[in-house]
Length: 314
Length: 321
Image (cartoon, rainbow over all chains, first blue to last red; front, side, top):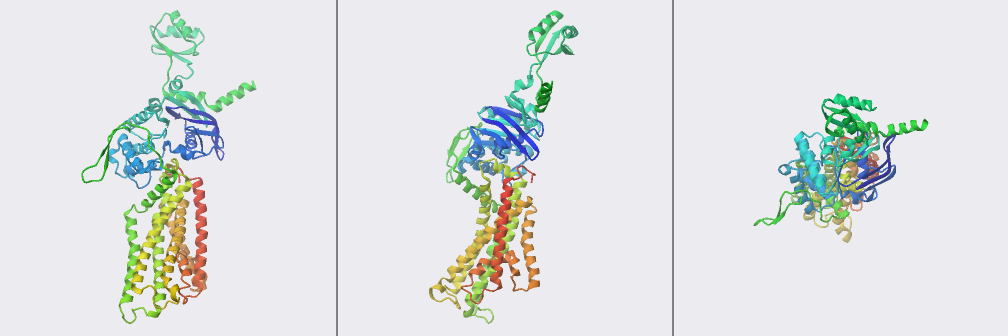
């Protein structure tokens, strides 16, 4: 859907993206990263708003920024900012956006009505966009981004500032669009949103790709922690595990063991040896927040680089 | 958006399309060509000029100025009252002067309109984050600028030319094809009105084009829709004030008039009217007019350069001006 090859982008002294190699697959992709990680710069490169200092950017199979007009006609973008066309009502906003993306006046009007219906703004379509509530404006911007029927939809913080109900409606809409075969790239700081909608995650950290893979892989990480829920005394198992030279913690009737990903057989034999009944056994799955923090620590490119240098020095 | 679409034609009304809500669907229809998109952008921006009640009311003043002038022309042609009727020998000169004054009034109104309606446009787009909405769609930055500029020119030209044509029609009906006192004999004299009309149109087009670009640039430089009218108005009023000060020092008939940007907007008109109004020799008015024209051209070049710089690195996002 989009590919970056050796892309570096700097602003004066600041390196926003550093030699990024990234393939964005079809489907819904969550773009994560702390503030200043380079997410906005990545979006701007995908939209042809910025030109990389080095490297190439391909979107929908076309090189940017050489084919910007062709690509942008097939891309929908919902910006993070509370931006609307000044002085237009809801339907005019969407019609204008669709026409700018290349639809004829008739098609634009037809699809604008449908997009507003889909986004639940049918009753407010003739009200000034500026008079909408924050949640309505978010949905209006989504309608503007999708009215021309894009193949790739880029959403920058679509749920920012929404109440729980509004957030859920927005996520349902995005999931529906993704299910219709539209590639969606979703940038957000709300990690459960990514879990709810996306099946692929890209983590940017300090201008480099820290993680690029499935949501399940993001949460399970390297499989280095195991959770064993026992029947009987968990302390018995904990003692056996420690005697085997592994670290573990006891959490009620569960024992969380730090062990390699291929340690399943060994852990099972420890359970048998300790004489405890096993109720549940498997790699510990983290929530998105914990996984995010862990990946930032483990996958921090600068940390990795420093580690490699230390090893080289030894 | 793949819901059923039902085409209906309610009796006695226009054709209508009823949309049934449905799920999302990709657009399978054709997309319009780039030139058509640019034309659409121009139309949207042109419509934008007339969106507010203020702009509609403002347009009335242009027509009102022509109606007042036309009333004066009719009264002075119809009523043979001592001191009111225009002597036959002075008709040509009087008509030229009347059109010149009307030009000054309408260009004054135009400048107010540009300051209040055109100058804030780019500033507002930047302030409201709309530039990102435009440039994240297939809209080239030069296309955006040309559409904004073209819309301002179309609107301004309409506001200037419509009352001018109205006034010329009234003058034609009152004074005929060759008013008394016209120094140009024969066919040349008969073409006088045509020359006046063309001169008025050229003058208006040039004035509108240059002033519109300067107004847009003022908004792009200050990047604040509230300050943009003050920036543009400040330049115009500042030039008028500077001209007055210079005239006080060097004399009213000096080239100091060239500093007055508003006065210089009718420069083309002054220059064009020489052949038909020899009573107005190539005097300081002409020098001032030519100088003012040069000043406008320099200002326009500066505006173009500023807008290019602005669009090379525009503020993308709301409140990032």
